[in-house]
Length: 256
Image (tube, rainbow, N blue to C red; front, top):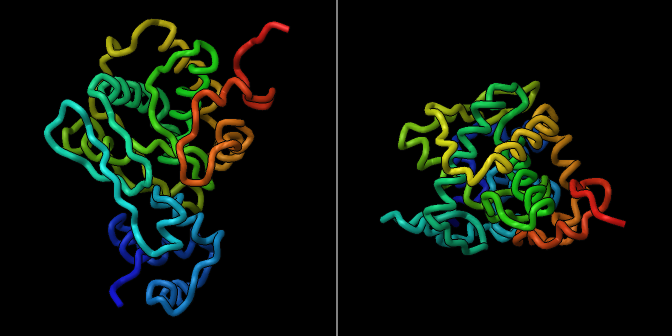
């Protein structure tokens, strides 16, 4: 039997066995047995790994990475993502996402708590809060339901492209006892990609309200959101579900 998917994902993401053991809260000998198919993961451990590597739980449990193509329309290269959702990214949406991300990193990327997990949640609430308030999309990214909250499918591949183009820098650090992937903007955002002042004001409001929260606080908060609650594990989160939000996460003032 060849190497299993747990081994392949760890090597691909350049994590040490020690890093993964800390995240799973298990001993290194036990983890080594898991990589050698001499022991099996619990469901909770599989969920932690899926969130850590941005893949579906099914990929971990079935010992197989489900590949699907992510097409960046307007570019020559076809990208692959380790997800079960097929998406097309128009060039206009791609450019808007890049500029919004550069803006977010310029505003809050230096905060010690703002790593990849926090960025996922900030992007999610920027998109879904805007849709609830104005009934139209800001970036309109595709988010799937993972155990630790919403995950933007487009994120990893686009960030790799931005790193190659010298738009951002990516490095690993620690926040308290946890490993963290950090992103730093190298260039200034082109704010002309944002349609109007309303969009920029909205982004600022979400950052002011949420960017100081920890990854756990934001994950817990996202678990209160009806769009996340009603989505199936590993599947798309529907924007329309924002209109069924409870007072826990709703940001729109509805008339009685």
